[in-house]
Amino acid sequence: MRFSSFGSLLVALLGASTAFGQRPTANLSGQWSGNLRIPTGATLQLQLNVQDQSGRRMATLDIPTQNARNIAVDRVETKGDSLLLTVSAIRARFAGKVAPDGSTLRGFWRQNNAKLPLTFQHTSTTAATAAAPAAKRSGKAGRPQEPQAPFSYQAEEVRFTNKSAGVTLAGTLTLPPGKGPFPAAVLLTGSGPQDRDEAVFGHKPFLVLADYLTQQGIAVLRFDDRGVGKSTGNATTATLTDYTQDAEAAMAFLRSRPDINAKKVGAIGHSEGGTAGVRTASQAQAPAFLVLLGMAGVPGSEAVVQQALANARLKTKDPKILAGVEQRQRALIAISQRVADVQQAQKQMIAVLMPDISLPAEQMNQLRAAAAGQAAAMTTPAFRALLVDNPTQTLRAVKCPVLALGGAKDMQVISNTNLASIEKTLKSSGNRDVTTRELPGLNHMFQTAPTGAISEYGQIEETFSPAAMQAISSWILSRTK
Image (tube, rainbow, N blue to C red; front, side):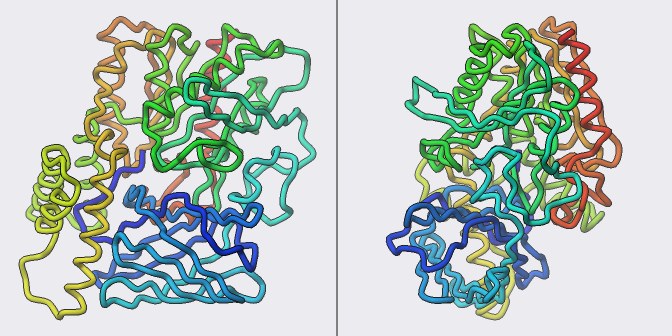
C-alpha cells in the first residue's frame, strides 16, 4: 500500500492512462525514472510509464512516496526529439528533449512560476514488454535477481475474464516441471495501476518471486491490472472492490485448469493486494491460503498517520516537529472524510498545508503547487476508500491459513503494529492457522535496506530478499502437501 507522507510539502502527481491525439514520432515505451529537487531541499523520485501501441501513446506518471493517483495527463506532444507533457489539473508541464540514443528525457518541470530541471532515465522496457512471457526478454540488462532464459519450467501467456465487469485480464502462468496437478498462487499487486511484474524503479519483484516459487514446485499466476499492459478495463476508475473481483476471477481461472489442484489455490498479496486477497475470503470459493506481504492491519486512516510519522522520523527526532506532522496529517484526513465536494476539500487542505510565514513569491508559488498536488491526491475516490478500509473487520471472514510478513524497516506499512493487529484480529475470530513474522532489515518492497526510506528503492540492487522468498515458499508447501 503506497500511502502518502503528507506531513511535508512535496509535489504529488500521477497522470491517468490516456490516449494522446498525435501519432508518436518515436517509440518511448517503457519506464522512465527521474529525481525532482524542490525548494524545500527534498528530492522526489518520479516514474513515467509509457506504452506506444498502434499509433496511440498511453502513459502514467507515478510518485511512490505520495500515492498521488488519477491526476490526468491531458496531452503529450511530440515533434522530432522534443516532448511536451501537460497536466492542467495542477497547472504543470514538462518540456524536454529525447536523447539520440533514447536513454534520457532531459528538460524542465514547470508549475505555477517554478521552473525545475528534471531528467528522466529509461530504466526498463517493462511497459512495452510486461505482457510477454517471461522467456521473451528484451535483452536489456536488468537487476541481478531477474531470471534469464532458458528456464526449467513452462511460462504460458494466458487470458481470463471477470465476467461481471466485462474485463479481460492478461497474464503469465508459470508451471513447474511435471504433470501436476500443482498447488498454485495468484500474485496481487499493490495500489495503483501495476503490470504483472509489479515493476517499479527498474525492479520486477513479482517476476523474481514467481520464478523462485515455480522452481520450488508452486504454479504462479501474475497478471496485468485492469487497464494496464494487455488487460482491458479502465485503470483510472478502478477501486479496491474491482481489484478484489479480478483476484476472484484469477483464482477461478486456476481452479478450472486440469494441471492445477483446485483445492490448493491461494493468493499472495503485496500491500493493498493483500487487502484485496483478504476480501476474496468472504466469497463462496475462498482461497486455500493467503500470504500477506506488508499489508495494513489497522484502519486505513491510522495507517496513513503511521506512515507519515515513520518517514518524518527519518529526518528528525524533534518531538514538536513530529507532533506537528501528526496534527497536520490528521487534519487533512478529517477534511478528506468530512468534505464531500472535491474542490472545497482541496481548498481547505491547501490552507492546512501552507506555512504561516513570509517567503519569496517564487518559493510560495512552488509550495502552493506542492500543496495543490497533495490535496488532489487525498481527494481521489481510491484514497478516500483507503481511509475507510478497516482490516479489523474484513479479516474476520478469513478462515484459511494465513502467513503475514512485514519488513522491520518498512516505512509505508509499519510492521510491528500492523502485524500485531492482523494476528489479534484473525485469532480472535477463530482462525487457528495464523503465522506472522517481522523480517529484520527489510523495507516495504522486501529488499534489504539501509534505512527503509522510499528513496532507496531504486538504488538497491536486490529486488526481493531470498530469506523472504524462502519463508513464503516453505510455508505454502507445508500447507499444500
